[in-house]
Amino acid sequence: MTTRYSRPPGAATLMHVALVCPDIDASLRFYRDGLGFARTYEWTRSAKAGCPCQAIYSGRGVYIELDGSTYIELFPGGTPGTDSSGGPLQHIALVVPDVDEAYRRCLTAGGQAFPLDEWPGDPVTVVLNGEPEVEVRVAFVKGPAGELIELYDQLSPVVSRQPAEQAAAG
Image 1 (tube, one colour):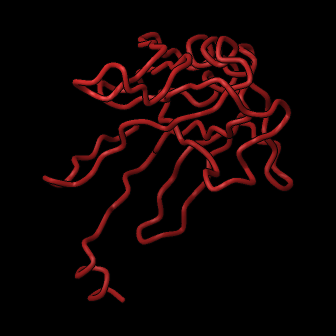
Image 2: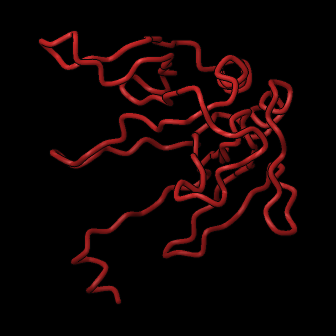
């Protein structure tokens, strides 16, 4: 029951999340075969507009399109055997139509189960205890570059409030 929400006029929106990958091709396979993202854009050089002699980045870069104007960006690098759980980017949450199926596909495409404390990371339905409670189905996998990915399906709507509404309720 994933619900779409509208963004307030003028509010920022996410363009991309960049990942350094020890093996870009393994990461591409994971995102294509495991999560179904098919559209990509690749480049090998970015330069200052109007001054092609001034390179900003040289090397392979790949955008994997998630939703029209939102991407996962892959760059070569990273350290094999590490994961994102200890860094400032704890995880990426991706809305999927079926958490159980996406989890199976991710594992088949080279992802790994990612346990959290006593939970093995496999699909589970949880309740967020806000006001009102929200029910979601989630699972966690580790992608080939070590990125932690939350597979997410929202089963009941989040009721967001403006700061003034929160202050009045509190």
